[in-house]
Length: 217
Image 1: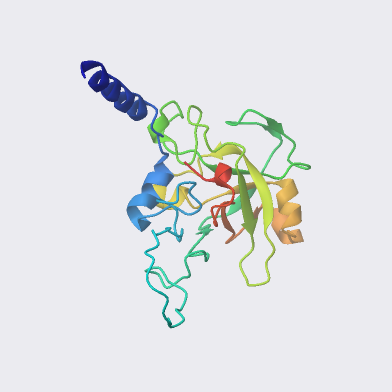
Image 2: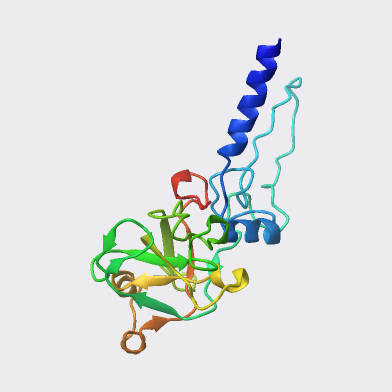
């Protein structure tokens, strides 16, 4: 009996020790929206379907039901919301940043998302990532222009950017791009000259829960 109790306590301590240390942006949206877009965990992902246990009854005629909607009036698997930039999205030069690989801005589809507060040496201060919290590196995101006919460009998270802010309400929504993504978003001559785009829409590529490895942490 004593051995069993000790085993249970050790298992609990181990599970607590290895629990995911979520980023500032993950915690910000969990508090703000009560859910996180594209999260791998169905319990946290906005719009995720929750499977209920079926109760079997005797056969009878039933009325057709309308698709269930969430509190925001969206279908469970619909795109409830995505991140829309509020600041200019610059293109980033070739280099090696927070994530391990060196990227070629002209030929690699990559993005830079918020690195959070401080000098990047504390995990709990990571925006979406930082120097010691790299769990979101190499995850696939999509970026697109606003509008119903806009086509998404898929890219990998290759670096973290400060965006001159330590405010989650600003930093968590911003994104910078490699020149390759800039090109695929059909940057205008003016945008190339200015080195930035405005009002981009983006998200981690796991909105329907089918690619959990891309879900943010």
